[in-house]
Length: 254
Length: 342
Image 1 (tube, one colour):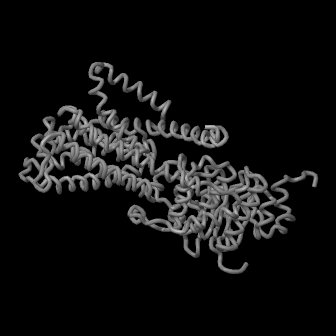
Image 2 (cartoon, helix red, strand yellow):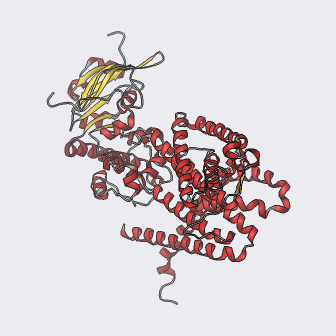
Image 3 (cartoon, chains in turn orange, yellow):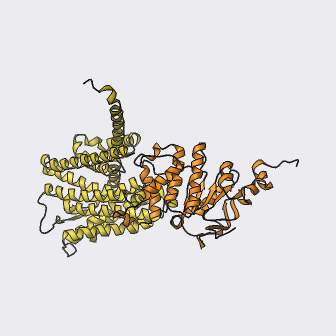
């Protein structure tokens, strides 16, 4: 691998009671690249994302962001440093306009404090950026409309846009394709591609749609029962024996 | 896009204009049709609004139910009482003392919030109930600063540049000034990063964190703002009624403030204003059926939560939305039906 990783997990472990959700996981995310994180249901993919964004604390191992040890940093600090994320089901402000929801992302990107914002410091240029992103996302909206007026698929795309407004350097994207139609999936891939290529963001992508994973990821990490069972390029992963076993089960006669 | 933007803008302009007109009418007509006694009650409802506004920052914007408003009202009220009526040997200027009361209450709220927000959600709410009981028993029993059960009397009215209100009608205008200032302050908060961060905490704490919101710090700041507003309300109350006692700062009163906030619309400044006036005036209007007042209160709250969880403001918005939809439909149909014929 070339260049310095922006995010590195080093032997990260997490247990919930007797369940080992992450077992000495080690991998790196590089700027400008889309990394796939795949595995069967319950393999511990979302747990890893929560460990990276600081929702959970690991029981062991270290997490490094941009060369700094962030294992003990609270999640809001990690967000400020540049770890953005989206959720499996989009999480927005209820009963609020689309503008307010996107401003939340822009607030993070601007770095203005509460006082500066109170005294009228406004985030500038973010509307143009949103328009640019909407072109890739393939839909438009009215700024003052309620967030609930958007269909599910567009809300999922909008969450990626909100995350981009926060000017992240790493983005954790949790199942962006789930519940989207094929055109929307294409647009989601377009957004991720833009983020990686134009903004040099390192992306960690959880997805069950193998189409999407094999299409846009250069590197793939496969986990099962909290453990990394394979890592490599899409071609390598597709022919990996362990991966096939994890997904399809072992043939007892073989 | 631009058409709808214009429609939205004109809608906002219309709303602001309608609100200003309503407020001006309220300010102009209320004193003309109100006797001295009713004016006093009306003034108290304005004071209550300021305290309830703090609650709406906590509950409406931040989704944190706190009963502690009365505690900090008490802090502000006793602060003003002690430093202006001479019982501690000092008689200071009312206005600086009032400002001091706000700072004092804010500081107390900051300390209290920093401790209580170690707890989350419902536990925090229960802790504020305990806090209200503690402060109430202090206000009731601490003779030296709070006068014990007798309370503190002889508090001088507000005085600024040698001018003092002569009666409750004068007070009305002074309080309106404070009401406007507090309302604008909170509206500004709502439209700034703090308001959005609070809303994100209310709706989803995990998403809030990943958007860089320091949940603990943001809650403590909101609690401090609420405390400052409560302190202001308490200080004003002390100067307005010239007598305070622990009866004003009971848990019962604390629930009343929550009702004021909920009735009008928990996240809507105008709603809170209407709610404060209704709840404060209601006992006066319903004097003939006073015996059933608490009963109807209880039933009313249950119905309120079922049928309009967002209070009067929510109801109003829903009706407006429906109306505007209908009107939009009509205007779209107009060219066909009313063309050249008439």
